[in-house]
Length: 387
Image (cartoon, rainbow, N blue to C red; front, side):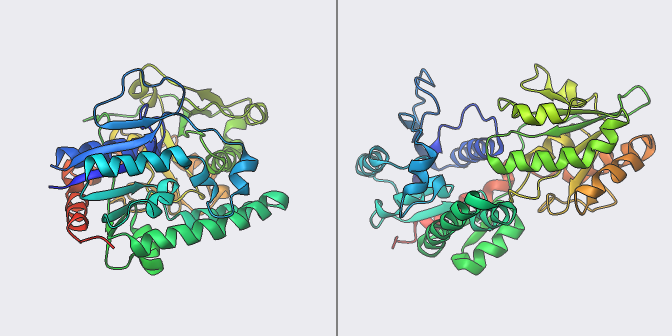
């Protein structure tokens, strides 16, 4: 098995959004499957964690202004959030002390390190097709933001294309990303790396008249695209909340902007809840509507394995073994959200059929075995001889 230097943006704990959760679960699993993994990244806040895990090299936080992030001629904004001379020096020191067989770029945000690794083989562990995500954000932008996104897209595309072309292996979190990254340079070396699910699995549940007429959204609002997606979903749900159907948005450690709360006084926003499973048990429907963001939606697994019937935006169920109309309800756009939920929220037979069918379809998936192809691809990349 390989000795891997895994370049992270930030420390993964607490795993309070999909990026950190996917990264943490994957690196733990890769180590469990036999590889020797050392991680390098930044603390998110000063002094946290108090004790540095043995397998981490942690640097101090970096919080550059948006002006500084946009001012870089070479690096996109995502990279400027992480990259600086101290990170570059830490990479070189780790290469010297660890002598890894492979360097893994965990997300495009650490891609600038490609100039610092010499002939060591590398692997791009993508979390989205970042060019595709930025294009979708650009389509919604106006004015100065549109100009900034346009300039950033050019830098982002150049770096991601370089990673796809020069890395010995690539992973993608959805089948759609396998295809799009392949077209741009990852063809023949991109492996599908679905997440594993370590959360609660509820063996049985019956939704009844006693279950509140409540809809649940899980939305960790840690970047602009997530906030935009939530606004879209709330607008689509407004006809239902106006007529008294309950809606709870679970935001974890990312409180929503005040203007969103003011615009939707009938919506309950929850941060951390002491018993998340119990909270989901008091919901009849889960909504995942994220037209911008790409990738696999880990929150779909929270709903499925806690047996909450899913209404989902088109494309948000990519790579799930589910069929629209059988074990999920799929909507084309935000205008379809309210009618779809209104059709089923009081149909207890349909709700229970959907949640049971989705659970059974996913029962044998998203376990440690699902990451064996990634572990194999990492081993192959380590033995590729580098650039």
